[in-house]
Amino acid sequence: AVQELAKIPLLIASDFERGVGNQISGATLFPPLMAVGATWSEEQAYLMGKVTALEGRALGIHMTYSPVVDVNINPENPIINVRSLGEDPEQVSRLAIAFIKGCQENGLIATAKHFPGHGDTDQDSHSLLPTIRGDRSRLDKVELYPFKQAIDAGVQAIMTAHLQLPALDPTPDTPATLSPLIITGLLREEIGFDGLIVTDAMEMGGVTTLYSPEVAALKAVQAGVDIILLPPKPDDVIESLIQAVRNDQISEARINTSVKRILEAKARLGLHKKRLVDLNVLDEMVATK
Image (tube, rainbow, N blue to C red; front, side, top):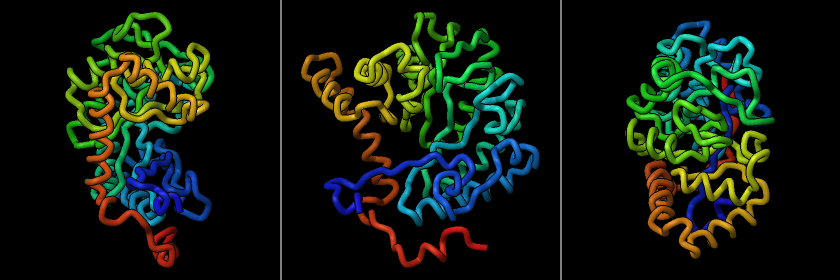
């Protein structure tokens, strides 16, 4: 219905960490990723991605906010834990790449998250801004490693984390999501990622305890993200970003760069040719034996 209303085809995303059943009743629900990690099986990870893609696209969804590629090295982690593929960066990378290929080879954009790595926290960024105190050498070996591997394997999107990492950006009260040093300097320029960058939910305490929705969105765009996810008061945020362009706080070229990336993603998905799904075949495509 919303695709029929849209002048330009919409890019529709959802969080399918455990398959489409993670969000939609009746679709296939997989166990958390740690169970996939326990199989050590790239074949299982690939099949999970493939089934997620086939069911998601049948329902008209084009992008999943998964897989989690955080390396779960802190046993006190209250928010990642079983959502991670494990505590070994090599294993996390290997299985995440298989999942990503399962998704993307079957038409669903995969999103590696939460950059630059949420595994070593004992606090939940839904409530406040956690700090990861590892030095750059440790971050390269552990947190950043799976992201670099996923990017080399062709992952099309990355989600940012509402985390403070003094080794990457010493600016106080600056989540990675709002850091030009981390998003543009590290992810875009140093690592060389040119796909879609989406924020973690902007309604989370890791951002809202420090910034208004309008200021947070402005800082995220200035940092280099392409998509602002779930900002509180979205109408106000959109209007504030328009004003920011008019006031030269953001250049029109900066906006155009992100819009072009989003339009290219839609074109790769073929949405300009076929944006609607056939509701009559859902029972043949979703939760089949």
